[in-house]
Amino acid sequence: MPGLRGGLRRVIVSPEVAVSQEDGDAGKIEIVGLCVRPLSEPAAEAAHALSGWLRERGVEVLMDADATGSRGETAHSREVITQKADLVIVLGGDGTLLSVAREAGARSVPILGVNLGTLGFLAEVNPEEQYALLEDILAGDYRTSQRMRLDVRAERGGRELLRALALNDAVLSRTDLSRMIDLETSADGVLVTRYHGDGLIVSTPTGSTAYTLSAGGPILLPGSRVYVLTPICPHTLTQRPLVLPADSRIEITVRGSEAAQLTVDGQVGEVLHDGDVVTVTADAPPAEFVVAPGRSRFDILRSKLGWGAG
Image (cartoon, rainbow, N blue to C red; front, side, top):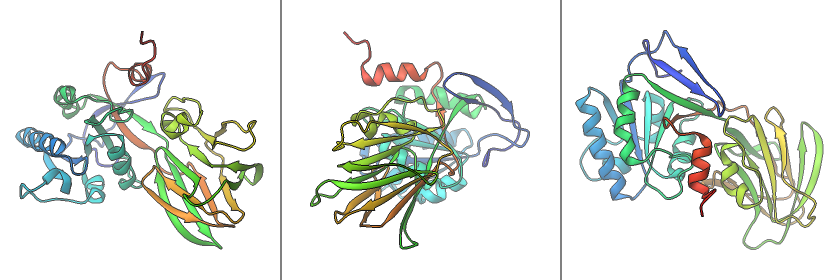
């Protein structure tokens, strides 16, 4: 993997199996990036303590502006951090993790999410677990899970309006002032249907526990190589969530006079009009997340969704 050098032993995991692999070009983790939830003093304090702990162990630390706060340390952009670091630690919630994963661009740098938020499907490590896990990581003994990302493009008359990577989803929805919208959707050039309703969600397996879950979509394990198309309040009630293989090329064309809002991972977006086309593929390199030891995906689902609670 990029950014990992020397004889580091790593494990890449899917929901079902773990496979050890030796990387002869890997080495000890020398540079760690710290990114925190914006405007969160507790997160900044946690980052300050963590940076001291890492530096005591000879690790170079790159911190974003929210992590440095007013302490006078050098702040780096998240784009720089994700390109230079061997490991990125995110202290915050899933929204912060989504932002960092997008800033990583094509580079698949391992990301460790420490949950200082509420639900935390992505930031699955608790603060009290981080130091013990980091001892293992610095020793080269850890597991990662690769998460499919979407390459989302919006065009108008052949001119690109927006291009972004999505870890969770791309959502086309009606604007505040519009009524129901029409979204003509095809897969690999073949018409799927014309959705008439409040919108459409194109989700990754990681995003299946986000917006699409609220809209009635299925829960998928992160290692699945599929999309989910979930209509939002469709006028035709038989239009249900649809699972398509990840090698499909999805094209969504806005039809009619009503404007549509494209939003990627709930963080970047563009207003679209009649004839504008959104193309979604799974061509983007996957994001890579450090997995908490001894905790399966089903453990996380039971904990976060309250399954089996009396």
